[in-house]
Length: 330
Figure (cartoon, rainbow, N blue to C red):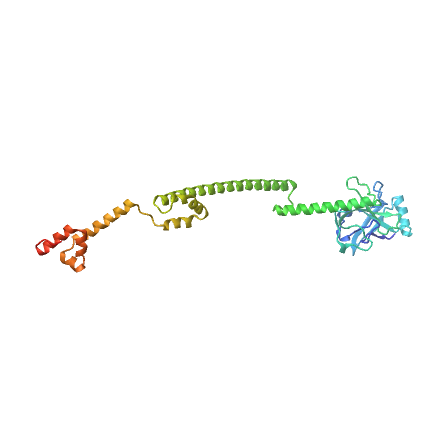
């Protein structure tokens, strides 16, 4: 008997409302153990093996080699040769990745497109009305999933979407934390804890800096106020401003320290009566000393003899007698 070729899988929409891309199929597990089962009954012995497993376009094809020493296999082979059995069905593990992309959907498709999946086995099926019959097996129990129950299919797709979102989130988190894609959960948790510790430490340091800056500013203001009080008191003491204006000047210092200090410095100091007297006496002594140091002729030429007579009559007599040899008629 020539080995018949079966279509194990294609990309058409199955009766459950989704389809599986051939490009996303992982056939390695299937190639290692390419058993032919009957109607996916993996608790029964296989009836043969698949050979020449291959992908052509969007189809997965394989040639059936039936066990000629097995009565059931021989019977099935005869029905295949006679055209009574024509269909094969791929058994696969639950999908590993799905996509909701509209460009991947075909008419009649109501559920996401499976973009990554792993083949488990392929069976000869007795009911071939579903031209793309499919069986998915639970990885934990190894038992077929009931794909006739729409809720099972929906939960399966939702779980994959959540898993994909979680995976994307994990990758994003690793990128933010500057970790390798291969980083394990313990590394991610450690990096997050370190990030939190760094944040808390920086928050404490920032608060300390704020408090230090606040204390420095308070000290600066207190020092400036003390200096303003000293300058205003000094201005009152030397008569530049009246004591009644002290508070007003202190407020001016608070508003603009440098300009207020410059304004006070520009106000002339008021001299006391005693000071003015002393200043006059000093000036008079200076003038008399200047007059006494000059001769009669020098004073005459300078026109200061009248000044000498008025300010120092005795000195005038001395200089007159010394010049003319006689007392002046005053």
